[in-house]
Image (cartoon, rainbow, N blue to C red; front, side, top):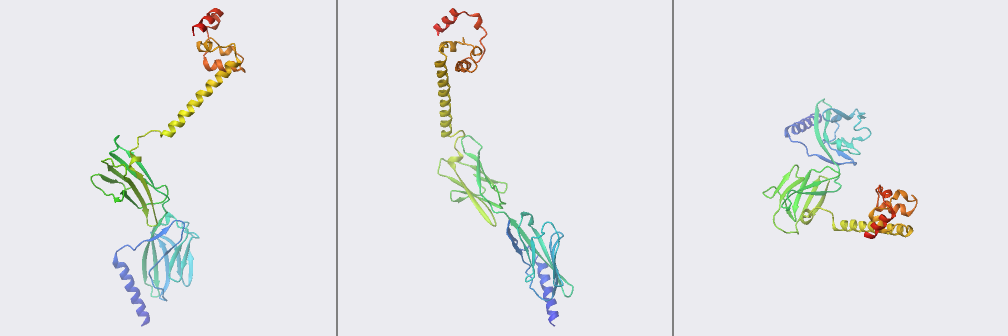
Length: 304
């Protein structure tokens, strides 16, 4: 009588499992952590064999005649443990690739089989979220906001304008998996802030961007321009200081002669300041130097 009761119970369980037609609620796992795949099957002496598989046909572990055998699949080698207390399968050091449908097969002492399926979904925590803005028009009344995640696998993107959730409409339109929102903006409320939330079943992260940052005209910031201007000014001062020191050390060369191009730097001592000074002011060789006498040189200097 007891054996008949157990067989009827097992048959009813199998009929109920096959008759629902609905996918089981997924088991959620996190990358790098452990997870238990439940069976929902009561432990009893009528179960003589249990086989865990990854669909379509990867055998992972088998319990038979009080013995547990693990199969040498590269995907699960040294990462799985069969739990005899509840027939659960533990998977350690989870990977994104472990996401799949798993099947457990129970064999009763009457030889009948009962099947159960478990859906495992593995997610990586979202590290951070960024918003990138792209202006379509120069007057900042039509722009795109894109929410990006450097690391993690988000399943949902949500947007807010201040505290108001955004949805598809005449002025807001989502693209793709809602990671990009197309916004037609009107008005001059500089206090508006847009917020994006990227989430998955194990984590979520937010990012915000003020409207004033979206509509800020492109170009260098004022402090960058100031640093460039200071650098240029310092360079000019240094050049003139070096030239001035050269002139003090090369008294036979005058400013007028340098500006007029009468001094040929190739005729100076290469190691002298005068050579550098003449090269600075007159880098091109003077070809007419030999055709001009001292009188012409003095006349030109006097004119300058």
